[in-house]
Image (cartoon, rainbow, N blue to C red):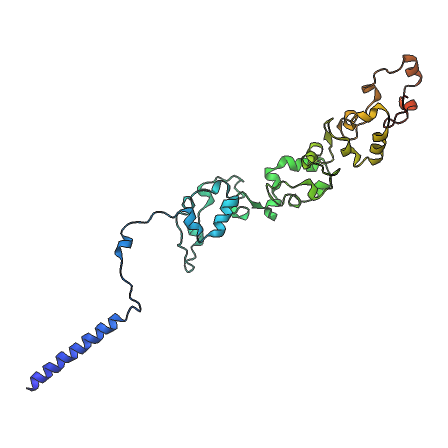
Length: 280
C-alpha cells in the first residue's frame, strides 16, 4: 500500500513539474505573432533609388541637384549596405572606393578624393584651402597670365572670385558697370579676366563704354558739330586701349603738299580732335 502511495505521489510530482515547465516555456515570448514563412519564400528585388531615398533624402537631393555622371543606380557603387557595425569599426571597409571606377586623374599625390569631392554631388566642389593652393596644377595658363600681367586680380586668391570649383562669377560682384544696364557679357570682350589691364576691344564697342572713364572727352565729343561726332571711339583708338592714332591713317593728304610741308602737325591748326572747328 505504501508503495502505491509513493508511486502516485511521484507521478503527481512529475505532472506538476511538466505543467510548470510548459507554462514557463510559454512565457518566453511576450507577444503572440503568427509565423508567415511565405514572406521569405522568394528573394526580394534590389532596392531602387526611389526606395533608398525614403531614408537617405539628403543624399538623393544632392544627386538630383549636382550628381553629374553619378546619377545612376545606387547599387552600382554600394555593393554592401546596412552592414555598418560600430563595434567592428568597418565603415571604411564597406564604403565604395573611388579607385574602383576612377583613375588617378589628379596624380598619385592626390588620392584622397573626398578632400575635395562629395561622391553624391561631384559636380559641386567646395574651394577648400587644399584646392585653392593647387589651382595651377590643372589651370596653369590662368596662373601664367596672372603672373605675367600683374593687376589687382593677381593679388587675390582664386577663391575670392571662384567660390566653388567651376563657378564663373559676375564681374559686377566687385566692379561697377561702365554705364547703366551694361550687359555683363560685354566685360570679357575688352578685359580678359586674368589679365584685365590688357584691354582690347572691337571697333563696334559703344562709345559710352569709353565715356565711363574718359568723361570730359566723351561729353565734348558728343557735342562737337564736326564729322568726328559720328565716328565711334574704337574706330580711331582701335584694337588696344591707349592707342593714339595718326590723323593720316584716315586723312591721307587733306591739303596741298605746300601746306603740309609748312604745317606737318595737324593739331597745330585743328587743335582738338574731339572737337574740331566747325567747317560752317
